[in-house]
Amino acid sequence: MTALTQLEELRKKIAADPRSLREASDRLGAVLDAASKHPDALRTYRSGSLASRFTNRPVDDADGGLVIDRRKHTALGPDGDGELPRALVESVHNLLRPLLVEQYPSVRIEKMKRGLLVRFNEPLPSGEDPTVDLVVALNRVDAPGLWIPNLDRNRWDPSDPERHVELFTSGWPELRHTRQHVVRVAKAHAKQFSEPAVCSFNIAALAWECIEIVEPLDRALRRFFDYAATSLAQRLTKDPAGVSAPIKVADRNRAVQRFRKVADALDLAIEAGDDDAKVYEILAATGVFWKLIDPPSSSIATIHQAITSGDTMSITKAGTLVAGTASGTTSIKSTRSYGGQLVALNGHRDSGPWYGRFLDRLRFEGDTRRHVIGLRVPRRPRHGGVRYRWNVAPPGCERRQVRIDFPLSSPGVPRVYADGPTESPHRYEDGSLCMWYPRDPLERRWSFGDGLHALLGQIAVHLVKENIWRRTGEWPGAEVPHGVETKTAQ
Image (cartoon, rainbow, N blue to C red):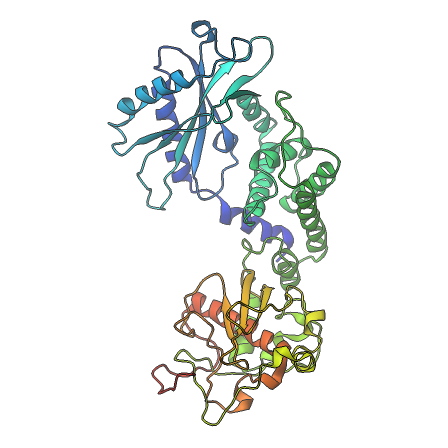
């Protein structure tokens, strides 16, 4: 599977449901039709991602505006007396609901900084419930574009949303499609982060600047991310309509770094040809499209076969599974997964607190911290013990945040937690991973003497097993039936 194939699959995966798009468009049409009946209305318009064909799944909202006839309100705007349209917004609010409630009985309308937010409270079968943002705007007297109110900051801002749609949808059909596909994939990339580095409008503006020819998606995306990184390193992105100030960015350095990382990864992925595993590792496992690209089926089959045959070491060589580790002879045991209570073996005493003694901690960690990417320096929680954190993306899994606790009460027995999906037949009641059966002999379970490196391997293997179980409904590898009599660790 080539980079182009992977990215085309990604594009289809994020594509908005046509029925949701139609519903959002219909809702926007109903709001604009009602707004046009205001006695001071000059015209209405459609804007934003929906109008520009940049919308991804899920379809959250639709944007439009009502332009007021300034001849009836000469005091409005900076080229009037600077008056804000608060009274007008209130009058539009009072007009809309009676006109919409018959078609949308649960409709609710709220004020926002640019005008009104219309909530319909009628979820679609997909769970989506698109809202409508209605901006109450004003033509500028001696300049192109509109005055857009900012009611929160008591000011007017210049903008030209109608021109933006005109520009973003310009060109022959093939060029429009290339631009739309690039913007949608770039938006999906940005949305993976809890704090996106740039806004959707910035992405659209950058794509409008650089997507000037028709190319396959992989090469068009490489062109976009390379241009975006270079451009933002030099300056903020200009408003395509030339009306408003350059587009603000919360953290330019972070934006440039993220764009450059994707551009470099796309170069490598394109060069990798049809090597499924390599393309997946470059585009997903390295943290580029880690939430968006599924591993190739051949890769999943290989992992499944290795786990069920007990050959977990074969999928951890050269750091393939334990992302970022150095290759070596660390033993990853073939364990039996367990889903009951935590067990303390008779006569067994945990060694510790080892983490307070430098040599003991050095023996436990070895050179793991130096070779494993994403492993943070251990911290001491307030309740005692020691805690490691690990950012890892095992094959077939999204990137996961792992927490490894060695509590003060049992410093030799780790409690391991991972974010993301929690559905699993092999977790303890507190959500920690049940990676081995504690009553098994040492050769069938991890023990403190195996060290941190081996523990990370067991965690990664367990996360892969959980992912396969969620996909197939079958647990790969050996497991201990639930209901086995246990003794809870003290």
